Image (cartoon, rainbow, N blue to C red; front, side, top):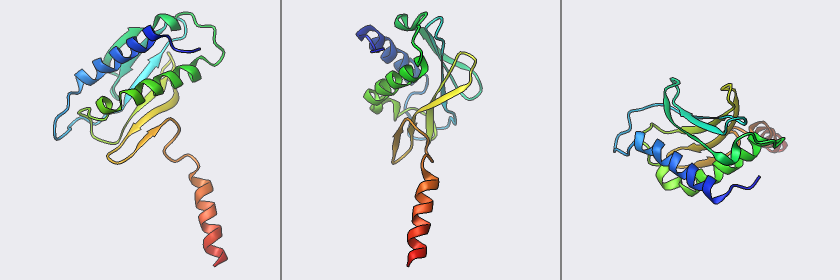
Length: 146
């Protein structure tokens, strides 16, 4: 599934509504992540904070009754692309860093971390500690060789 132009426009409008709820100030005071819940049946996309307070919602017409087998993987990719395009806006939310955009299904089960914003780094998709075990094992092997 490739996102249509109208889907991209809808998603940008959706993320702009989130940014309006957390306007930039010099000293952020809110500590939360943004949880995105999407329904394959209705195409509804909702944003929540950590306390399950709804921030905004929209219906993405292209996603209504989608029959895609890997629907959530495709949606995650589309959402990451839009977040990446809107990096300047999303990086300046009035939220204490680090904060993440997290994708959930319509039953609010965690599916993927879409984007992590921190003071110095951005992680698009994947986990912050992904591959850490392998890196530590390689480091220890090299250290023990000496």
